[in-house]
Length: 251
Image (cartoon, rainbow, N blue to C red; front, side, top):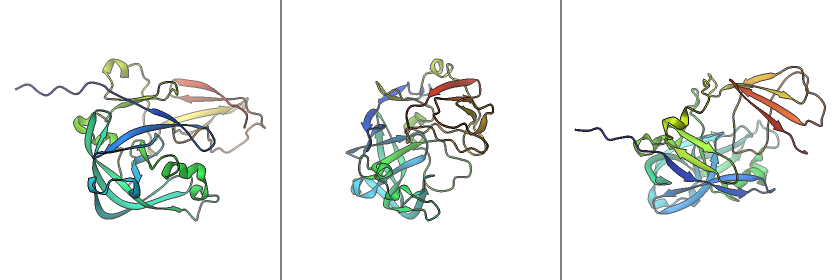
């Protein structure tokens, strides 16, 4: 008997949507049973999280187990662990998700985005939810894992996000020849690769875990020490042997 060959690459087209202030967002079509929803493709969070009111009740199995998920900006999603037959591109799978019943604000975070339409566009104004494809951090204990990993044939265990806004795409199970063109860096204890950034003409790099987050539209740096006065024109980012000089625009 011959073993079933692994599935070939599956290319899923993405959509460029405009946020509250005209910034570009990457949307992906996800089908729950027979209902297709466009959600935000987010590389900065983990798990498929969708407003329960937008989900087809007949196609979603709620477990009754409560779960919460907090984003770094202070928004807390409260709901139930659930599962659904999900189709992404041409691939399906039985995918765990959070059916979001309520959005709260962390009392520990000032100016929490729970009151900010710029953030709430992810849950009701522009999208009904988020598909978070960030690897599960080692210390993460709640629901849910990266949903791409639950697709049939483990086709989503490896993926490449091509985020160029002229033709964005998500490639599941990329060909080995394609993967060899990338630089591999280790994921640290905090669930992110180590990187460094040098803003403008500062003489010293700031190094810490780095996340490339499609849920945001700029560069955010948590740093200590001296940062040169604005205007900043460049930010040089280095991760492993890879570097990129980002041009910083007005504001």
